Image 1: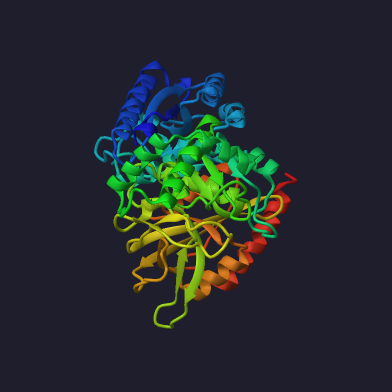
Image 2 (image 1 turned 90 degrees about the horizontal axis):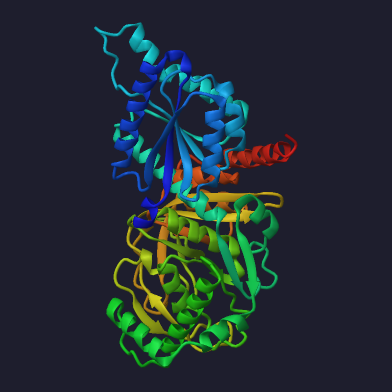
Length: 494
């Protein structure tokens, strides 16, 4: 949360000189009070900074230009206190590269029925000015969040706070570097994608490094460093034997991998059990631990999910619930409660654990390497979201499905991290819709974020967004996918 408070959302107010200096002073005072009130709200994790009252095209342009180049500024909140003729906004909004939310509020909550006069009407024109501003944003085809309500209402502040988390995700996306240790798993389609287009649209730098680069970094790790990390394992998790060589090897991978990632500015990474030359084990516990520290991860070279995990971790900083790489594995098709058992061979983040995870060593059964250490735990009951990114050829598609996590029966012979859930609206429709949308078997799962937060993020970066929820029907969902295909085809010609 401390890191989020270092990020700034600028609060800017639209008006014009026609109202005169006395009114503009009142506009400024009201704006400062609103910005201070929002900044003090626990629902908003970033710093809200009142920037200025903008009354001319040059002021608006210069503010947008400054926002583009200020590294601390991750977005704008625009408020039309009075009537701001929207042609003034064209040049500035046309160059703005940061996301913005249109807060359609007004300083006063209630109409002062017995005292309202023309002076009050002229000063409090958000209903008037907001529609003028809204037109030009729509005319320019600009993506933005529109939030309606009084600025002191908790619902408004929570909605705005959620949007600011999406803006944090946007900022992270535009500066994200992803390390691929080895290539994608051979013959797998969904983990592939256009890395050039991803950098152009999303900002991601996706770079390949041979596993040998990781091994060199691991070779620089000392036994004393491993001993210290083993002490951390023993203090924070259930660990029966600090001298176990397989666990110590995972500690060595973790230390070597973190050293390499940090030295090269990477915040996300991938591995592939088909590409382990020079490694004795597939990074299991090491990948889980690094995810817990905030790094994004994708198995089988899946760089898209690695990036999404990292972005969702940044967006959910300070929230309860956690976020992890995930994979749908097998179904429970009992008509009484059809559900999905989600897990992975190894790499599930302990931030979503129900209780303190145990560190265990078991054979993997695939890859032909030594038995790797891994965390073993269950996920608590509750509401969550399962999200994925897939490359549709020419565009990315984000698919989000809210789920309800339930308690599985005992799994004594499955020593992995695991979650059992029921997707919305049910397994039959949820799984069918996911497959029709081209959803991957790799996902980013969170019990902290909600659908709206990811939808706002997708809109900011220009990614197609589809959701599978309680109102979804297969017939309507098929139509939505066809309409989306047509829209994105035509939009490229605009």
